[in-house]
Length: 273
Image (cartoon, rainbow, N blue to C red; front, side, top):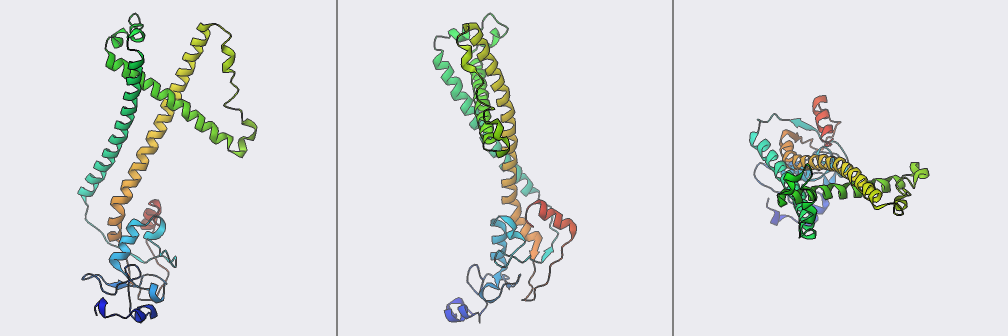
């Protein structure tokens, strides 16, 4: 029976089995309507292809559970051949995103180095290092101002990182007695002293913020790589997992599902069960 011959009243009355996702009763060849859960009426049937697409794009437990009745699907495990191309594509996508993040960081460092170069047009600041141990670096403007950009980048990263960290502590009720933990350092008390003391204090703060910036940068890089890895793993893997864990047709007779412990642990690790 073609979809054009179907009466809307028959569909609404449930006398004709239709897919609850695409609302069609006929699909592609070998794309049968199945009843995988406890839903009844117009929600009982679904095309296997529609269900697999929904399982692959929907986050959460939709991979293994019906999002309407919350019943767990009966999953039949199918052993698939090793797909080396999927692994290669996954690694390429991860490497691409990591390179994009790296280039973005290098762009920021380059901009900061360029601003330092514009601020030191006459080169007096760079020439002040000619008599020091780093005079070799000061002879070449590009690496010198690049290093300045790296230093400024980590100092700013440490500065804003400590501000965010202190803000999170101040919002924590357990730290109610430490609201001034990041304030009241008495920084302004150094100004009546000599300029040498103030300059030394500035150097100390630059070193401290640079070290904090390196620590926060390492933490941010780790979290970014982990996020990239998880994102591409879900995109490239969940669709294949729908072919490995096939939803069985229960034909309206739902029973509690059984799945081998090793597969349950795998799906739980992937946050799909």
